[in-house]
Image (tube, rainbow, N blue to C red; front, side):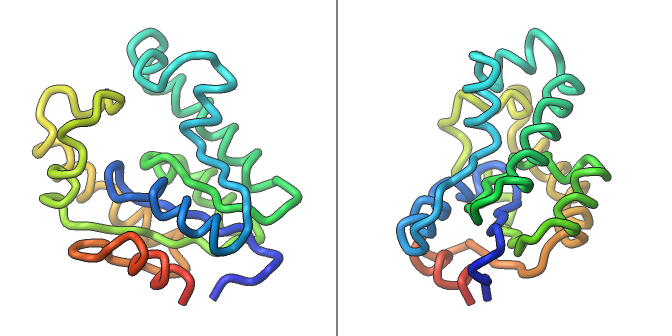
Length: 169
């Protein structure tokens, strides 16, 4: 259950539906959404794909960490949509556990994620082999998501409203 003074942080793989669920939750709770990818694009004036291709993943992860920690420090409780790789940084994992926040891991089977991300052009990590990459990333990141999660919500075969309800429980 989310407290009135807590941020609600949604973590999980790309394509799991964090942004979509956040919109439903924001309406329900009357909270602002702080989407780390959107904030990065606004701050830098470049897309995530551009940052990856011109500056590389390490530079992107550095910007992502700064944006994530800024979101966690926001004075008003918000819904924070964390980029899928935010958990790769140990300092981000520590920050998420130390913040006044409830962290919910939205998780799905890799096959569900592959179906959902096939049409996306803004996912540079999936350019070569989406299914293989997602399977590998899920295996690598699962223990990291589990480490930060206060709750785990499966999204497979559920509507966005069913997922939102489960997040609020």
